Amino acid sequence: MSEHELRVSKIRDGTVIDHVEGGQALNVLAILGIDGSEGFGVSVGMNVPSDRLGRKDIVKVEDRELSQSEVDVLSLIAPEATINIVRDFEVVEKNRVTRPDTVTGVLSCPNRNCITNADEPIETRFDVVADGVRCDYCATILRADIAEHIDV
Amino acid sequence: MMRQDHLITATQLSRDDIETVLDRARAVADDPAAYADRHAGRVLALCFFEPSTRTRMSFDSAAKRLGMNTIDMGDVDSSSVSKGESLSDTVRVIEGYADAIVLRHPSEGAATLAGERVDVPVVNAGDGAGQHPSQTLLDLHTIREDHGLDDLTIGIMGDLKYGRTVHSLAAALTEFDANQHFISPESLRLPRSVRFDLHETGAQIREHEEIEPVLDELDVLYVTRIQKERFPDENEYHRVAGEYRIDAETLEAADDDLTVMHPLPRVDEIAPDVDEADHARYFQQAHNGVPVRMALLDTLLENANPDGDEGTGVDR
Ligand SMILES: [Zn+2]
Image (spheres, rainbow over the protein chains, first blue to last red):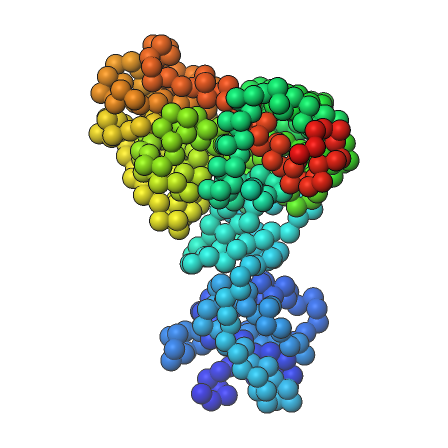
């Protein structure tokens, strides 16, 4: 794929999250807790043509290497994502995301009556189950609608 | 031997845990005097963030019959909770006053949170529409004394969606060889999370909208209240509630040995004419709350104080 088709320029150092399901790029940033205020260069490509996904999103974060535990959370909304760690314009590491056992503090519980939505000093915690995640406090199961419950 | 620090949900209980408590409940019921000073000098905190009469009194009675004292938070209106204190802070403070905490709270997951914040045993006495596992233990004790817990066919009827006693009972029964029939209106079926757990255990469950087709197969019929506030429209409530009401005539089609249970309070889902029938067991069931909660507190306190020398109670 040529530079022109990608529409997002190469980065010198940082992380490229590729093969994100179309439309999920902003959720990827939300899950990673990146909103621009950190001062990293962030570029987002949306609905880029892809052989594998039809349309895909790409997220590039400059000067920041994401850890495996950070990126594994992405598997919930972008199971096909690949993570490229770039140093001096070269991809030095390429990983797939794998499903974590638990997700802490990223998602909010959709059950309004859950104690995690009361005014308590508490982080949400979800168990990753067969095809979704499950609140450790109230047992509510979150499936396809996960992206709607990302705490931004 | 039950290995738990807290009792938060029925899903945490193994068959062994359940049988440990129920065996002890039987022993307590047979010889209550032997337990009278068991936990003398210990204190149980009753923290009810939601109104309750019978569960609170049942725990109060159980604790006192073990020689314990109880301290009661009182009504939520008059406590520091209304001044905006978090549950996390409240239980941390109360931990210093008591050897165990019984908690009822309107939010699902409240007891889980409390259990994470304190070291003394926490008993969940109801968390919103979540769980009510001590009720389940007394329900199981009642069923066990009549029928045993294996090779059992039970019908659970009423509000299965919000009924926390139902969620706990259904989960606990998966530890035994029980066929579970769930009878409810479409809008009050079991919630997805409970269904998920039942499915995971491979439990045999069937769902129905009417009681009649399954009534004669049942060993136990567990009736729960359908609450008016679950319906947007009062006429709809009256129509639905009327369909899930049983009376002596309904029970003519039942097996002679059918046991009818209800976590109480009932409104009119069981007609008073059932009270006199041999089937009725709901008052006995409520009474069983005392020996079962004695056994539960005894077990949890024993786990929390393995040397048995912190209270002035009898050494074992
Ligand atoms: Zn929750």
